[in-house]
Amino acid sequence: MLVETAGGLFVAKLRGAGQGVAALVAEIIVAELAMALGLPVAELSLLQLPADVESLDKNDELAQLLEFSVGLNLGVRYLDGAKAPRPRQLDELDDDFVARVLWLDGLTQNPDRTFKNPNVLFWHGRPWLIDHGAALTFQYGSADVTEDSPREPSDFSNHVFGARAALLSRYDAELATLIDARALVRATEAVPDAFLADLSIDPTPEKSRAFYRAFLWKRLKAPRPFMA
Image (tube, rainbow, N blue to C red; front, top):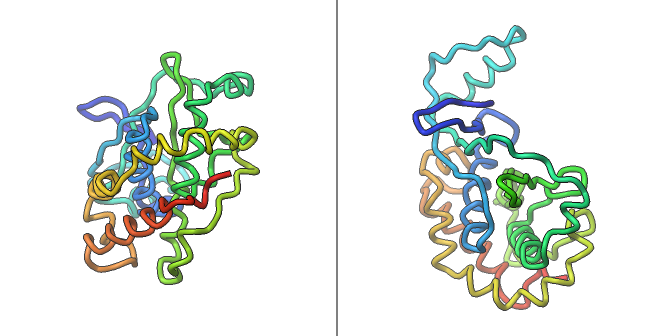
């Protein structure tokens, strides 16, 4: 849903849709980590949805979605004029960019960057990453997370850049220096308390943030389980 704000146009990611607030948490954390890795992502902004928003949807589906989404939601900057890449454009992306994307998706267990849905847009002559709501899959079964869960290997067989996964070994040492404990703190601190309060991880927002940090920190331990 496209929303016009004082700051411009944003694509609204609503808490009442799909995987709910967990998807919004993933969007924020992964975007922060992507920026730490030097990858371009669209600007994020928090959107407050009032209860009196009218819907013109004749089937009332949008009206119901808006009703379930009253309160704090997430907006992603609308990249006006952005285009979906052609397969050849993806093939021609340089090794540095591809390695960073693979490393990010391996760390965050993102299954949603496939040939059919690469979640990459070309805007102003460069590739931008979008749609990370499916990442951080461990948060959906937080009660079942064990000490071994963060060490689960990544499967890049369906990844849009999976054929180039051998690049990871070349770039791993460099990229690992960019994601440290401070980077994980910044990424989790960007998640508002209101989102974390809706999850069943822990009643205390700070303990929920610590859960995300601990999982990702263990995933960062060498040898990293997302190396090809």
